[in-house]
Structures are given as structure tokens and as C-alpha cells.
Length: 397
Image 1 (tube, rainbow, N blue to C red):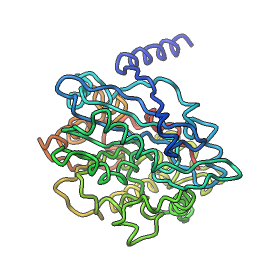
Image 2 (image 1 turned 90 degrees about the vertical axis):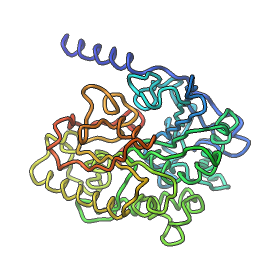
Image 3 (image 1 turned 30 degrees about the vertical axis):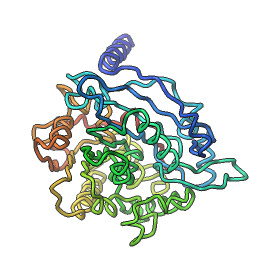
């Protein structure tokens, strides 16, 4: 017991030394614009101001947390931080790409670094004028995105020289969907790019052969009225639910985009490949929690998932401005935590950390388009169910 306690204390000391606390800001002025969380509370963010040479540089991270697909699930979220800013912690720790220390984040440490909290359940795409009369739930994610961006422009982003719109999980999907819109808000001369971390959700069938995630996304876009806020280059060709899949959207995005993703994304394995509804007997439960506990047949199924993932990625076609870092770790969101972003023991791909790859790509020092060998070849992966703080509340369907 004492050894466990000592290990926990040591881990906490490491996390505290690597991260720094940033207080919450509630955007009260957004309420009058109808830009509110599911429960009607104001949107919120954490803002760590840039300094030195980075004062006119902006990194914005959209928080993750899955989605709600109907009145019942959206009402349930109003009782959590994913649907109400009243229930959000007042302070969060910034580390990884949000770190303010050069040794932990050499390319972006002195930028303005912001985490926008996620409380709308639609990847910031919803906009339904009417409030649900039964549940009193608001579907206003797109308005939240617009309101916080207006606020940042007024706080100095209108003078941005460099900017990145990023995110984790559902927030990362939002970064893809809003990428060109974000660039359009900034000065014409600004260097603007987008970063997707664990947001390349693929349209594939479950272990039971059902199209679970496609149906789910159809319900999300219908519930939130998302269609008008999705890229028109996609909705002009496909139904709105299909435009939640980056494989149908990213090719048409004009702004340079970098994709960081595990080919065995732990959230997708749990919720797209083997969701509870497709595994009523729970035969995948232990495997989903720990890849080391997967049977040979389960690993074979996961290798097939990787093949589907790479097929979806390759369908985007070649691009000189797009970057990607597809490793073979069992992880979900890897840029916002020091352990996976840049540390002596961080995972590497082609001898390169995620931090180095993203920095080289952003500053045009070096192209990075690398896909890892199949599991379990990469010995730098921890190969456990690693999910960052920004996504750990992505609950299973």
C-alpha cells in the first residue's frame, strides 16, 4: 500500500512540475447573443497570455468530450461539465502544447494559449433558435464558437501574426470543421494552420456489422441543426451526418492541416468498433480497457480497423501542405499532455516526437507525413489506455 501511495505522490509531483494552473473565464456577454451551453449557462475558456516574441501568436484548443445525439442524452449532459459551465472546475493545468515552458513546448510556449471548454455536445456546430420546451435545453454550439472568437479578436487576435486552431477528440473534429472559417477571421497576412489531435473519426462498421457511428452522427446533426454550420463543400454532396467524418471533409479544406492520431485510437476502438450495443455480452470489455488483454482474434479485428483507418486517410489524396503523425499507440489525444507531447520517454515516430513534428510542419522547417508500423512494433508506445484530461469524459455510447 505504501508503495502505491508513494507512486501516486511521485506522479502528482511530476504532473504539477510539468503543468501550470490557468483560471477559468466566463464569457457572460455571450448569453445575450444566445451563445450558451446546453443548460443556458455562459461559455467558458482558460486563457494564458502570450509573452515576449509570442504576443501576437495564438494557439486555440477546442476541448473534447464526445457528443449528445437526442433530447435525453443532451439533457443528461446538462448535469455535467460537458453541458454546463456552472459545473466546470475553476482551474485547469496547462501542459504539452499548452505549456508555457520552452523545455516542454519549444515552438509555442510563449504564444497566447487558450482552451475553450466544451459544453454544447455538437463539436461547436449546433444552432437551433427554439429552446426545447420540455427539457429547456439549448442547442447553440456554433454560436459559442462565434462568440469566443469575437472575444479573442477584441483581445488582440485581430493582430495575429501566427495562429493555430487545434483541439482534442470532439474538439479536434471541430477544429477541422471550422478550420477555413477560423482562417477567414484573421488578418490576410497571418500564418494560419489547423491541428487535429484524435479527431479523425472513421466511418466503419462495428464488430456486429452495424453502422453505429454513422447513425449516431446523423442523430447528432439532426438534433443540433448542424447542417448550416458544416463545410458547404461537403453538405452540397452528402447528407450532414456524413460531414462529421473528416474523410469526407478534409480534402476540401484550403487551410493547411496536421493530423495527429493513433491508428488504434482507444476511443474509436471502444465506441466505433466495439460499442456496448454491439457487444452485449461484454467480451471486449477487458480488451478495450487494456490492449495487452486482447485475444489474438481481437487483435486481428483491431488490425483490420487500422487498415480501414489508413484507407480513410489515404482517400484524402496527396497534399504538400497537410501533415500527419499516425502512430501505433493505444491512445486518444496526445498533444495536450506532456507525457505524449514531448518528454524524454515520449512516444516517437521515425525518431521524432509529436512536438517536433508539429513544430517543423507549422514553421515549414520540414514536412512530416509518417505512418507507424503495425502494433506492437513501436516500443516507445506505453500501450495502455491513455486518454488526456481534455478527452477523458468521452463516455462510451
